Amino acid sequence: MKLLINIVRVLVGLLFIFSGLIKANDPLGLSYKMQEFFELWGMEQFNGHTLWLSVVMIAFEIIAGVALLLGWRMKLFIWLLLLLIVFFTFLTGYAFLSGKFKNCGCFGDCIPITPLTSFLKDVILTVMILFLFRHRDKINPLFSNKLNVALMVLGTVFSFGVQWYMLNYLPLFDCLAYKKNYNIKDKMKVPEGAITDSFAIRFIYQKDGKDVEFAPENLPADLGSYTYKSREDKLIRKGNAEPPIKGFTLSGITDADSTDVVLSQPRAILLFAEDFSTPVSAWKADFEKLYASAKAKNIPVYAITGRSEEAKRQFAATSFGDIQIFTCDNTAIRTASRTNPSVYLLKEGTIVEKQSYKRMEKITSLIQ
Image 1 (cartoon, rainbow, N blue to C red):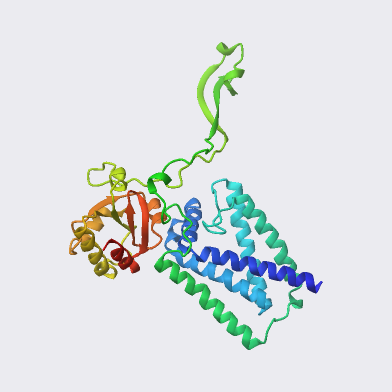
Image 2 (cartoon, rainbow, N blue to C red):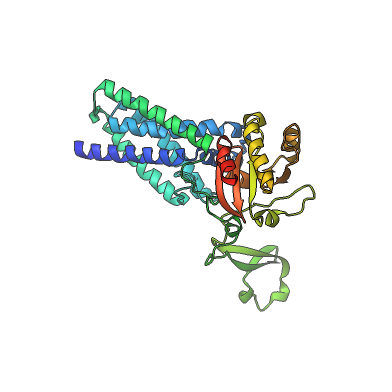
């Protein structure tokens, strides 16, 4: 029995650490997934809190996994793990049963899994944690208390520190469609071999006060005795004919679509700024150097934001006040820019380099 307890303990601990590390690569991704749930439940007022909730939840997954491997304070952590997995099982069950989510975000964007797979995974984890809960008195600390505490402190510092790094300097592993060396134009196309949605046509008629549904090939011989009401196209098979990049449409002051013009430039600099929660003063000096270097090389520089009027006001007192500003779908900006702001160097639509606003000098060096 003790061997079985230890095997289950190690498996659960490693899975929680792995799950936490995958999500720690991109805490904003989990934050946005939380917002999807809140918006679906009519709880948009909590959207402003999703980032810190994301960071704390990810850190706890890693910390709890380390505690389980060390067998440290099991009476506390096994309760916390049980509560967490019940919560996760509810979320993944809802994601599966509602049919409104393609990916629950359990392993981030790097390992997308279906809601059904995620739900079954959490059900199995719940059974394993219940087993450990029942035998929690048989789990002993792996090392001395001082060493266990030291390892727990290191695990805690690491779990928060790695997220701080990703939030400030972009994810270490880029698993989104705006990846370095990817061509944005190509990623806006539906992949070859993709399966389109299949629909079945249904005609709705009424007879004797009742609605009756017919397929085109099954219309009755006495159709004249029915009253036509409507036609429906029912989805019978969901395809995957979606481009990796959606909503990337750039519009200027005339509202004309300038996406192709921008992506066709021999070289171009894109500044992505979802909003101005990071003050312009925090990155103004570095961007002014980049802007001056780009102009000296005749490289066009564009600002892409969902708040063009605010951008004009913010940029007015800077040396890049004449920068061309485009608006874009906010979801596309969030996907392209995991720091706010971030900067891209493009070559005919191909992403040559992308950096956080804290590392703009890397792009400045490249164009010089």
